[in-house]
Structures are given as structure tokens and as C-alpha cells.
Image 1: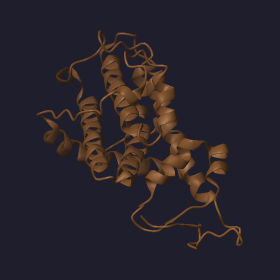
Image 2: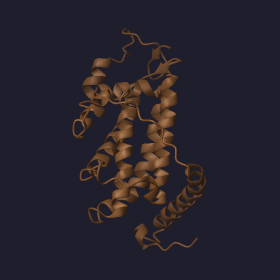
Image 3: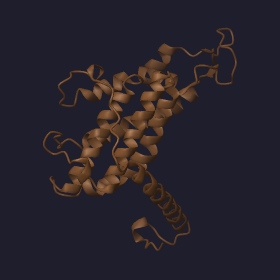
Image 4: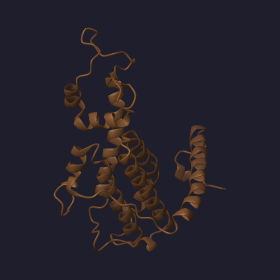
Length: 248
């Protein structure tokens, strides 16, 4: 592996005063932030570190942690043994998100086997920020918060949320074990620690190729709609997006 340099690419030196003390970082941000930074860089080359870079990593960490908390909070009344909805009975959108979760697991397994931790970091970050937070979980609020407890659509989304939570905890444990173990303690699981579980296996379904092709187009259209809504808001044509009428 390469050397660790300061934020400007200079060799660290006590006389220059550009060193970063790992203990200071852990005291300020926590050990998992430092671990996440290590996972985010290409260690085969020289890497740069600064408090500003660590601050950026802490923002990514906060996004991941808050998403895990959101998932956990919204499956609090979900019993995987009795409330689970079979894959073939899920709505198409739920099946699409389940498919994307399998993509994440598949990529993470292969990356860990090659010691490419930065790939795991990037893959999980993109999945959490783009497809979970900005898409699926944003839509889920209108179902999970509002529908009756045993509503089929609500249980379907909770099924995907539960699988996503469990998979992400296991995928992230090699990188941020303090965080994943902390959350695991709130789950009613037979294993006392996430460290004692097996890594998630990829669950391929027959309609994945069809879903991938169809939903790629839907996501493109959705992005165009969001762009048009933002432009309409900036031009004061609408206040909230719910005031808009969409014509395709």
C-alpha cells in the first residue's frame, strides 16, 4: 500500500505540524468514521487525509446511519415470520428495489473477495443516498405511515425494508462494526451480535432482467419530471410539487 499524506499531498512531519492523530480523530468523530475513511480510499496508491476530508466522510456516515435508523423505525411492528410478503406477491416497485438490493450484495461480496473496500463504500453510499433515501423510502412514507397496520402494500414495503436493513448491517459490519453492532442490539435476533451471522447470499429471481430494463426507463422519466418540477418551483409557477399536474 501507499503512504498517507496530508490534504495537500505533502509528507506528514511533526516539524511541519501537518500530522493527523488517529486518536484525535476517534475522539472527535468516533472510530467508525476513521474506519470508513480507510475503506473509502484506494490504499494501493498514496492517499491524502485532512480534517476536511474526514468531515466529508462523516457526512456520508451520517446519511448511512440515519437511513439504517429509518429502516429500523419503520419495521418496528413487522414480524418477519408472520408478516412477510412472498416475492411473487410484491408490487413491481418493491420487486425492483429487492433486485437492486441483490445487486448491492453481489457487488459487495465480489469486492470484499478482492479487498476492494472502496468499491463497497461507493456502492453502499450510492444505494443509500440515491435509490433508498431519494426514491424508495421517500415514496414509502405515503404507505407505511398512512395505511392500516396489516395493509398488503404496507407489509410488502416492510418486507423489502427488513431485508434491506438486515443485508446492509451485514455488508457494512467489516467497515463500521460499532454502528452495526449497536443497531443489532435493538433487533430481536437469535445471534447476539451481527458479527456471528453469515454474509448475505444473492437471491436471483427470474424476472430481474425484465425489471432492470423496464425500470431503467421509469427512473429516467422520473428524473426528468423532478427537474421540470424544480424549474417550475424556481419560476414561482408552483409552490409545492403536489400543486403540479403532469403531462407526459
